[in-house]
Image 1 (cartoon, rainbow, N blue to C red):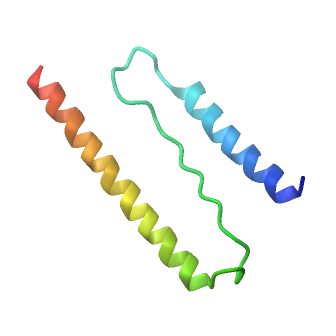
Image 2 (cartoon, rainbow, N blue to C red; image 1 turned 180 degrees about the vertical axis):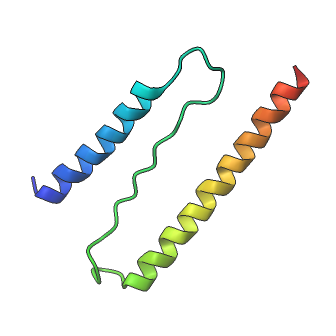
Length: 80
């Protein structure tokens, strides 16, 4: 196993563990989600610009999905 794999797994695991540790079970909100995005080495196989553009698109998509989920949750709460 290479160091990159080890570090990626560690960061992802710690992120999940922190969400679990800081969650409040009595709140009726959706659980916090964790997104881990592994980026390839610089210039391999994609250029830095291609990777940057892809990351921007992923972030925009994730945020739009989160907004849709939040609006759906708000509608459910408002409906009672």
